[in-house]
Image 1 (spheres, rainbow, N blue to C red):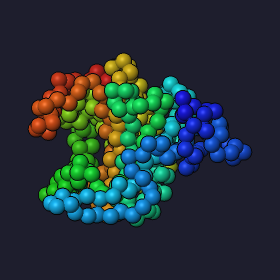
Image 2: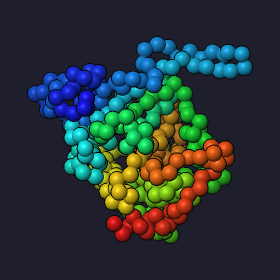
Image 3: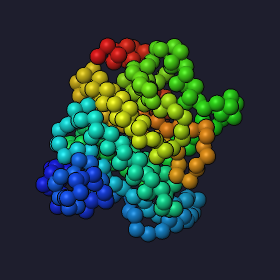
Image 4: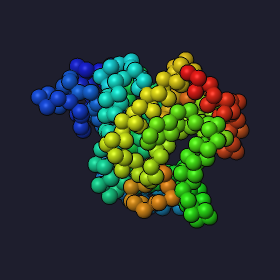
Length: 292
């Protein structure tokens, strides 16, 4: 496995790694390591050039595509890692966003994890990916538009209202701590879909405080363990939704993590309508997960 200790020569040279001071780069000893993706979706060299082709618009494929190797251990999921290791995974996310947002070519950064072949993983060694894009994805635009319209109507953040509503009803809260809440969202798209929301309002993940990273790591470990126990180690994706890089005043938005176990495929109805058929009510999923 190219991601295991001792095989660093089989990967591109590391961008950054958490390792003891007396170890050299691209050698064993690290505990979280970020490298360029060997087969990038976008390339960092070049200019962002927008152009037209007849009635169509196009843009050069400029961006960054990085792999965050979460641990030197080949077969340990988040729930099996020490808390400090998981803290450093999420600290790496923060610091990579802070670094890449200085590049004015980039508009948005998505951090995501594919775990299991059915979730899109090509290597089984635990890792996340980061892609910096020269545009804002349509899904994020739709989220932003919905949050903005809600704020214009009610003068409140919709995500903060969701947190307050879930605290009040206590129907869909899987677990929570001082800084974060994990819920099966109302009208979940997928069985056992879980969102992790910060209780402190902030549109940008990179603003997370270092003392909050511990509670984020803790709740992610708990949810990972519950889902693995409930669903027998399912393939899953998680997605970090955060504010676009050049929009520092999106007071109506609220960063969050969406965790999606891959229990069934998306068919023609879902593709054709944007509606989702979910056979497991979020309240039932919550009840089941709470008991584990």
